[in-house]
Length: 190
Image (tube, rainbow, N blue to C red; front, side, top):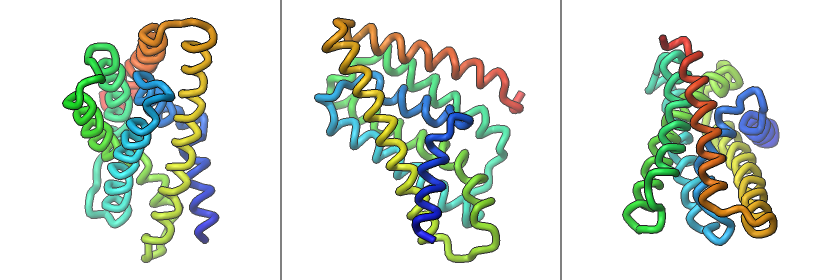
């Protein structure tokens, strides 16, 4: 059973049909380079902790949130992250901590987005601890692949092709913001 839920979490985060989660992780990493791997690891872990908490609370039906609102809030997290990337300096310790808190909070929102999928997998199973843990490990592995690919592409473009890091950040953040706005406008929330 562990392997099944691990695979489902892994496939869910890397599913191109659910590209909003991929886009969020890419936007989250755009401001960092490979040398910042510790910061990125903490950032992605904060996001994972956030979505794990709400995924568990939602699976237990302690937290119930309308899907239409979540469908709007997920791209909003992408937009806010993209704006944060281009408007704030991430070098200060204060801004780094702020970024971690945002990742944790946005993880809560994304966890609600994962919850309907996870609940449909669970069915009537009453013990969620094992499946939830395995699903989250699968999601985390998938996220780390996205982070690794994003960092590798950033490295190639900045260190080999000669692009400036600021240009890389502006390009990725701008693209993420544009896609997020389109997703927000298409949300059933309106």
